[in-house]
Amino acid sequence: MGMCKPSGGINPPIYGPFGKNIPDIEGCPPNSRTDYYDEKTGELLQQRWYDSDGTAIWDRDWKHNDSHHNHTFPHDHYWDWLKDKVHPPRPEYIGPNGEKTNIHYC
Image 1 (cartoon, one colour):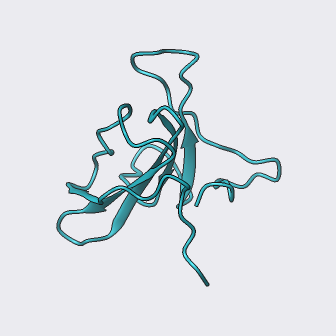
Image 2: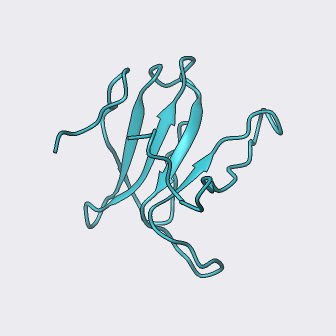
C-alpha cells in the first residue's frame, strides 16, 4: 500500500510534548501537511493540512488527553475561519455515515 501525500508535500516533522498541538496555523507551504510526534515516544499525535494560502484547514488527532470527552481515535477537526479569524474553532468532523475521519485527507 503506497503512502498518500498532499500535492504540496509533507513538511519536516515536528516533535514536542504530549498534550500540545501543532503551533503553526498560518504561513505554511501551500497545500501541504505537517505531522506532530511525541518527543519522548516518537508516536504520531497529530496531522495538519494547509490550503493553497498555507492556512490550516484540517487536523487529524491520533492521540491526546481524553479526560473530558469520550473520543474515538483517530478523529478529525476542521478549522472554521468564518467564525473567528484570530482564534478559529476546530469543530469535530462527523461524516455522512457517522465516521470520524475524512478519507479525502491523507
